[in-house]
Amino acid sequence: MDVLKKGGPFYQWHRDKETVVAIVPRYGTADQVRWFRGPTSFAGHMMNGSTNGTKVSLDVCLSRGNSFAFFPNHDGAPADPTQGMPHLTRLTFDLAGNTEEYKTEILNDWLCEMPRADDRYYGNGEYRNGYVICHDPSRKTAGAPGLSSVGHFDHKTGNANSWSPGPDSAVQEPCFAPRKANSPDGDGYLLTLVNRMAENRNDLAILDAQNVEAGPVAIIKLPHRVRMTFHGMWVGQDALDNGRYSAVRTK
Image 1 (cartoon, helix red, strand yellow):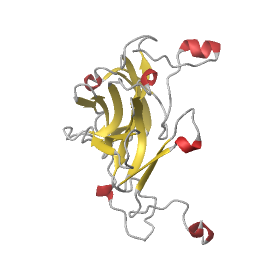
Image 2 (tube, rainbow, N blue to C red):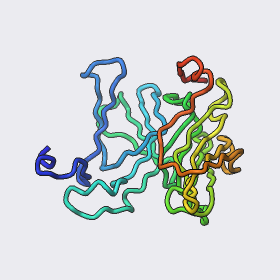
Image 3 (tube, one colour):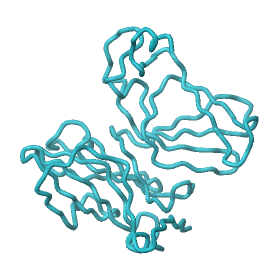
Image 4 (cartoon, one colour):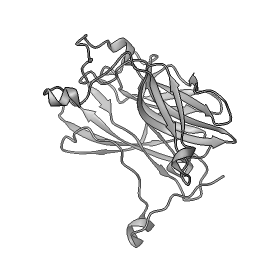
């Protein structure tokens, strides 16, 4: 507040501050909130979370420094992009422990963001498939720097693969659409907008969510440019017809 009163920026990055996480019960009271603390980190977007016994986990794109260069450092120091590179990371909190510490495990070393999963499996500890926009280091000819590929992580096998739209192109956050309402986890399609920067327009690429690296099964060529968008969802025809949406969790 003191910074705002002096006309300073609303957001600032404090490299000297620890990370504080609150685990809040959905149906509980304020005195049941558990607080955990860890090293300085920047939490981006979340892929999924789950509860297994007394342990709560969260899969999130995490970096050790400021991922948003437009957030100035509070001490005026220049941004360090090497510290702001996010990787898919699992945070695990043990509610039965007597410590405020939590466990951190990097699930994949690719630079990535905008993670998604099969919507029907959000909150399910058994989910297997996750999707991101990413930089696959094996793709030397990706046209746009940075996050220029769509990636698929298989949490059961640890395998990862990706698809890149080619030169002068980049991808936006994928959206998952199940093949059928009761199809298994990850059985469906990914819809992602592709920025064709040299042509100042977009494609809508439709990928097989189980075979992302094979490339699109269909492409819809849009005659105009679509600005960077994110956080969409697939809505089936039945929901459009009756005006009610529900996610079906399948085990």
